[in-house]
Image (cartoon, rainbow, N blue to C red):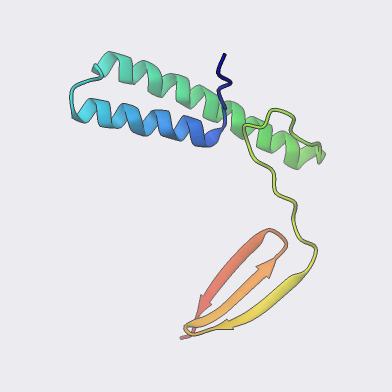
Length: 97
């Protein structure tokens, strides 16, 4: 028995495969609509999961949304075109003006 991975990357793959199927007529519009609606339901569930994690600090056990530890340190690095600022899990690029 093959184990399927059900994560955001797998969902994205199915949605793009469906789009290609619509373009080459191998997927009917009705089937594509059903896949799209199911995908949207899964995405909405993942959004709720992320909001729950933000609100409670709890860890996700589903594996659908991959969690990354936020590094505690911040850094500012000069780049050829401006500045790269890393603060926790966010990266901002500022162009020189």
